[in-house]
Amino acid sequence: MVKNDFDSFSQMLDSAYEAVGKQAMGSAGKAIVFRSLSDVSMEDFGAALTAHLSDPSCGMFAPTAAHIRSQLAKFAEADGRPGADEAWAIALSGQDEGRTIITNDDIAAAFTAIRPILDAGDEVGARMAFLQAYRRVVAEARAAKTALRWWPSLGCDKKSREPVLLEAYRTGKLPRAQVAGWIADIRAGDLKALPPTVSKEAALNRDQVRQKLRELVELLSMERAAKADDFAQWENDRKALLAAQAAEKVDQLLGAA
Image (cartoon, rainbow, N blue to C red; front, side, top):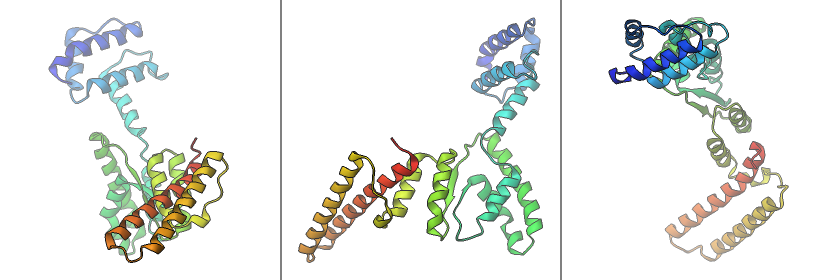
């Protein structure tokens, strides 16, 4: 908050005191609270004030700077970041090269810092160092209001990739568009693995794709002597069509309308 925010801050604080049936704080007291929360934005202050008034454990009390800080801390802890022990389990599972995992920037940063300890064979020491490093990374990220970013680390076992990606979508870690794109890329060369569609619209799309593929194959047979750039264009078209057919499976798996 900056100096020009004081009037709005004062009005919001007065309203909160009125809501709990307390006499409004004097100007001097407001100035102290305002200075103590100078690093908090007005938006965050308003959200924390509302959360305080709605909190069954303390909402009956007139809000103080400590109450606002407490609510802001709760906001930070609810940002979806896993605890240190869960983060270590995720990081450690990623050491299996065949396994696909969903990790995030915080876990990756902390694990990179302690990797030499684990490589030396000291798993206990590596775990302790990771927990400390991870908590520091998370604290810094929350202080900087850095959004949590999950991303997949694909393992060698191709069959395990799709279930992990779909679960990440269902739990809200990855957006649908990204998951659909990754799965389409995974399945683009595996048309036989795609089950038949059930809707008339999907069946029509499938037939159109197949017809287009047959036409492209015939075209390729007639133009084998074409220039390299013509072949490259055909290849791009082929990949696009494969991805379109793979998208049918993606929509089914993700429950798309």
